[in-house]
Amino acid sequence: MLITDLFEETYFAISANKTRSGLTILGIVIGIGSVIAMISIGQGSTASIETSIQSMGSNLITVRPGSQRSFSPVSSGRGSAQTLTIEDAEAIAKEVSFVQAVAPELSQRYQIVAKGKNTNTQIVGTTASYLSVKNIEMDQSSFISEQNVISQSKVAILGATTRDDLFGEGTNPIGQTIRINGINFKVIGVTKSKGGTGFGSQDDMIFIPISTCQKILAGADYVSTINVQANSPQVMTQVQTDITTLLMRLHNISDPQLADFSVLSQEDILASVSSITETMTILLASIAGISLVVGGIGIMNMMMTTVTERTREIGLRKAIGAKRLDINLQFLAEAVMLTFLGGIVGIILGIGLAYGITLFTSTATKISLFSIILAFSVSAVIGIGFGYWPAQKAAKLNPIEALRYE
Image (cartoon, rainbow, N blue to C red):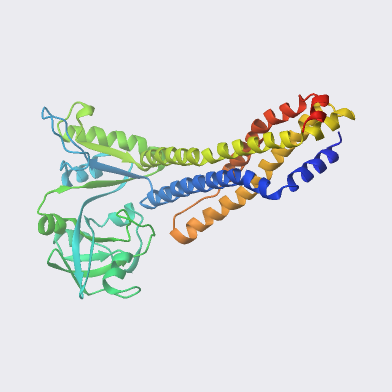
């Protein structure tokens, strides 16, 4: 059988019953569209999170308090302990090599009031070096100075989102007064917007001197985080090791397993986040892939029905010289063509879904060539796999019995 004849016969067989063919490939269309959309959501979320983490600072190492194990059966969770101090940050700056800057911070959420408006946001008590460590740029006026920290000044620098919430979008709040936990603070600056949403957004924060935060707001002498900026990516591992060694000595800890702090780099955080998002992407794509299997079963059922309906035709073809291979190829080509058409429509649907999700929900999506090739390859395998049995059944029919079939 010539290739042109094969394609012609396949076209006529599928177009003879358009409604049934369309309903048959619907499962493939939904499956491929869902797989592409789910993978694009997962990859888009991963890219968005990675961008947010990287925007928090370059060559950044974060030291956080953790739970020191004891004989008590109850221990606090990592990050809830109060084991880090300003002295720890100063020691890191003085004694650890390859450190460019150190910025301790004490973060807590408070209710903020200004001109009749209020919001609940993160208050970050920190030092002047926080600006460079976290790659923050000023939009209006200036950031915290060392003199502000020494004198425990009641001054505040607003994030772009907080500025908009309290004073209106695009306004100049410099010199205005806000009340944090009932205490007046003077606004001396506004940071440039870095984008991002949620509790970790640096646009939705207010920065004040760490001494003011400790003594006046929190009434505490600990810090919640020590941010360390290494000189280059190449020395980050060494800096992490040196910080761990130094803090264990300062905290009188000999066993690393009992450390009451954790030292994490951006690479550590990115690796953890990527692992989680990749697992979720695989899970979502696997669930969506069930539709592909259902679609394959639908194609197999249709082809089995087609073989039964065209039994006399198969007998006639064999009687005039058609070989078993010719019959096999004909029905297999029909199954593959159905999945091919479903694959094309499914790819268009998946890309449309991805763009629609981004447009209407602001959820980041990223369409990759890999997801399209994967979905289409799976559909091709399903077409061949589920079409093979009906094709074999048709090819094995006895021509005499097939011609007698009613």
